[in-house]
Image (cartoon, rainbow, N blue to C red; front, side, top):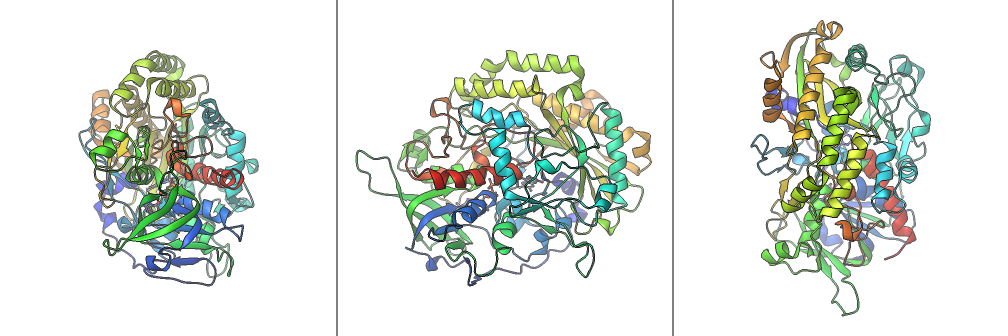
Amino acid sequence: MRFQRMLIYFPLAMQLSMLPWLFLYTVRCSAFNITSDGSTVDHQSFDYVIVGGGTAGLTIANRLTENPRITVLVIEVGINAQNDSRVTDPGNFSIVDTSDLEWGYTTVNQTVGGNSLGLTVGKVLGGSSTINGMQWTRGTASQYDALEKLGNPGWNFASMQRYMRKAEAFHTPNQAQINLGITFSSDAHGKSGRVITGFPNPYPCPLCKLWDTLVEATVAVIPGLRNGGNIDQCSGNPNGVARCSYSIIPGASNGPNAGVNIRSSAAQSFLYSLPPNDRPNLYILTENLATKIIWKPKPHTELPTPRAIAFQDVRSPQSSFLALVNREVIVSSGSIGSPKFLELSGIGNRRLLESLNIAVISDLPSIGINLQDQAGISSAYTSAFQLNTSVLHSPSTGAAAFVTLPQVLGVVGAQNYVSRLTQTITRRATEIVKIGAGANIEGVSRMLRAQAAQFGEENAPVLEIVFAGQTPTQLFGTAAWILLPQYRGSVHIVSSDPLIPPAINPNYLLNSEDLSLLVNTSTLSRHIFNIPSVKQLYTSEVLPGVSVQTQPEFESYVHDNYFAVLHPIGTVSMLPHALGGAVDANLRVYGVKGVRVADASILPLQISAHLSSTVYGIAEKAADLIQHNQP
Ligand SMILES: Cc1cc2nc3c(=O)[nH]c(=O)nc-3n(C[C@H](O)[C@H](O)[C@H](O)COP(=O)(O)OP(=O)(O)OC[C@H]3O[C@@H](n4cnc5c(N)ncnc54)[C@H](O)[C@@H]3O)c2cc1C
C-alpha cells in the first residue's frame, strides 16, 4: 500500500525537494561485490543467477551464499540507493519523489472508471522493500493452509510462519512504547533473522493520541472488533484494529541518533548490514537488465535447460553481456517482472510468443495470468491541530483495522454476500478463462471456492483500513481497500524488446461484489470520521468531500477515484499443472529444467495482508528447497 492517492490530490507534497542520489556508480568492497559494470561478470560462470535484486532475490542470495563454496550473481536493473535518505528515512514515504526508483508502470485503461492507473513497483536494489510503506503484516492461518489444499504439499501456515519468522529479527517494544498503545504477541515473531522489524522509537506522540482516538472510533463503529491485549497483525489472526508494526530499525533511545529510525529493506538486511569481509562468493550487479535465458542446445530426451542469462546495461542499451549458469536460474523479478522475463525467454503462451517471433521453449499459457491486485479508496481531513514534526523519521501510517465480512455487512448481509459468491463460482470462472485471465475452469473454480470459504466460514478479514497523517499537507485520513478481489487479470509482453513495458490489466473491481464492498468501505470510513471525538480533530473533509452523501454518490466516488493498492500477485502461480499452475510446489517452472521462480508472483490467491513478510517467507522457503532438492 501507499498513501499515494492523497499525493495526487495534494501536489504541494510533490513539490518537496528531491534529495540527491548518493551512490550511482560502481562500489567495490572486499566482501560481497556491488558493481554496475556488467563487463566484470561477462562470460563468468555462477552456480546460481538470480534475476532481480528485490525482496525475494536478496533473501535467497543471502541464504545460498552462507555456503562459501556456492557462487551467486544477482542481476538488478535498479540503482544501489544505499545512503539515499529518500528511502532510508521512513518519514519520507509517499512524501518525496522516488519515481527514479520505480518502474513507472501504468495499467491499461480499466473497464471500471475508464482510466489507466499507476502501478508502482520498486526498481532499485532491494526492490519494492526499498520503497514500500513498511507495514509488517501476515495473512490468516487458513490462507496459507489454502496453498496446500490447492495442491502444493508443504505450503501451509505452520511452514510459512516458520519461514516468515526465520527472516525476521523483531525488536520487542520497550515499556514506553507499550504505554503509548502498542500491542504485540511475541510468539508471532522471529528474533534471529536479518530483517529488523518493530515500532518507531521513540514512538511518535502526540500523534499516538490521534491513533488512539481513531482506534476507539473504529471500535465504536464496528462493535466487537478486537483491539488491545496482545493483538498482532503477524499472528495468523489479523482481525481487529491495532497499531502498525513495520520493517524498521527502531531509533536509538538517546545519543546523537536518538529517534532516527531507518528502513529495514532487503538491501539493508542482506547486504549493507553484512559484516565486513563476508560473502566474497556473492556478486551484485546493478543497473543491468536481464533480458532472457539462453538455453543449452536441446537433446531430444531432456527438458530445456539454461546455459546463461543475457543482460544489458540500461545506461547503454546497445551493450550485451552473458552470465553463465552452472546450476539454476532463479527468477525473482516480482509479479510484473517475472512473467515478462519468462515470456521473453520463450516460456509462455505459444500463440503470444509466436506472434512476437519468440522461439517457444515451453508452451505454458499460465504465465502472466491470474493477476490479482487490490483496489482502494481514500478519505482525507484537514487537521485541526498541528500534525507536527514528531512524524519525522517515522512512517506516516499509525494504525490499521482488518475487518471481516460480517463486521462490515452484518451477519445476514454477509451470508447473502457469501451465497452470491458461492452460487456464481462456475459462471465467474468461465468468464475469467474466457477473457484470458485464467488457464482452465476447474483451476479457477477451485481458487474461487477457496476464496469464498475465506469470506464465509473461515471469516478472514476482507477489508483493511489504514489510518495515516502527513505533516506537509496537514491532512490525516484513511487508505482503505478490499483484500480479496474476486476478479482476475493478466500481464503480458507486447514486444520482444525487453525495454518495452508489458500490458498490465488487473481488471480492478470488475466483479460487482468487489465494487459494492469497496463502496461499503468508503461509507465505513465516513462513519468513523463522524464520531464526535474524531470530528473535533479536523476542520474540514477533503475526501470524499461533503458533496458525497447518498449511496449513489459514494458509488460514483469509488468508481471514479479508486486506486491500485500495489500488491500484485498470482502471475506465475504455484499450482498443479493441470489446474493452470506455472510452477510446482518446489517452485520449478513446468516444462523446463533448472529454472525456479520465487517472489510475490507465485502466490495463487490474495491474502488479508501486505505482502512483504510473506514474500520474505516464500524466499526463505525457496532457499531451503533449492539447497535440498536439486533440479
Ligand atoms: C509503493 C509500495 C508500497 C508497499 N507497501 C507495503 C507495505 O507497507 N507493507 C508490505 O508488506 N508490502 C508493501 N508493498 C508490497 C511489497 O513491498 C511487495 O509485494 C514485495 O516487496 C514484492 O517482492 P518481490 O520480491 O516479489 O518483488 P520486488 O521486491 O519488487 O523485486 C523485484 C526486483 O526485480 C527487479 N527486476 C525486475 N525485472 C528485472 C530484470 N529483467 N532484470 C533485472 N532486474 C529486474 C526489479 O527492479 C526489482 O528490484 C508495497 C509495494 C509498493 C510498490
